[in-house]
Amino acid sequence: MNSLSEEYECILQAQQEPKHFEALYDEYFVSVWKFIGRRVEDKQDVADLVSDVFASALFHIKKFKPMGYPFSSWLYKIASNEVNRYYRASKKIRLVSIDHASCKSLAAQTNMEWNDLKQVLGKALHYLSAQEIELIELRYFESKSFAEIGFILQVTENNAKVKTYRAIDKLKQKFSVLQ
Image (tube, rainbow, N blue to C red; front, side):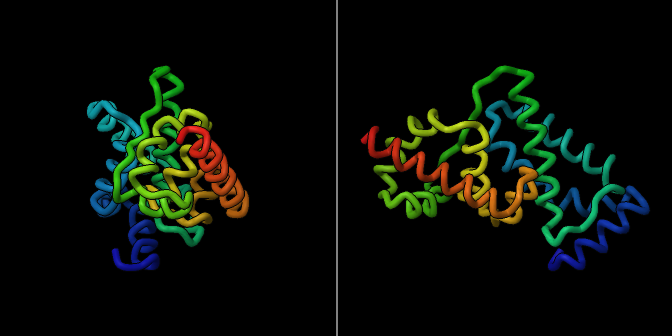
């Protein structure tokens, strides 16, 4: 889908006839898989969660209202809730996947070189709350706008921005202590 209007037309078709949901599934399956896969280690759990996300999206497609964000933001919101539910239910330790490509903008934001950043990032993340980690993941690893982050986390755009920068400041403080 090349534009929000094409995407919205596809959503309208899916709201009328569920068989049209397949196009949305095909379009976003890989990105939702990657989104969840960066947060959950076990591949079977990832598969189950992705399945749950799309089942929920299909079940609730008639409730979807366009807000000016891509459909993927709504799917990420569902996925975020599913991942949070998974960790609450399983009592497993939350996974944060860090790779060089995803961290370039985070390194720039913290004024650190990549090699310095990767040495302390794993330790520093232990000092952040689950929501602070999710804000950083969405902004720097998923490249979401503050408006989309606000929608996904059900906060205002400004609140998403403020909380993200506070999390970055907290990381910077921990970096200086851990170096």
